Image 1: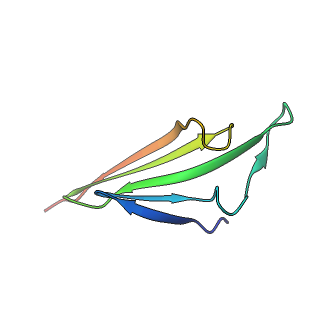
Image 2: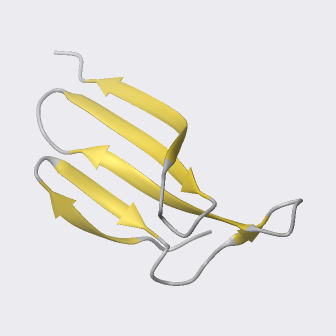
Amino acid sequence: MDNFEGIIEGNKLIATNIEKGTDFATQDGGTMEFRLNMTLDGDTRVTELNFTTNSGGTWRQLSRLTYVRQK
């Protein structure tokens, strides 16, 4: 289990483990790091899991979950 640290930007909580130096080895000898983005407003919550293989130079989406509150 990872412990994520992060910041709030606008309506998103951006949690990342990149500051902690937690990474995962890739088959080609590189490393992969992750961050978690969650929207914080409205009845819809979107959670995105992103990954980078270049220390945060670029991020790509690994998965996206959308939750809609039923009234």
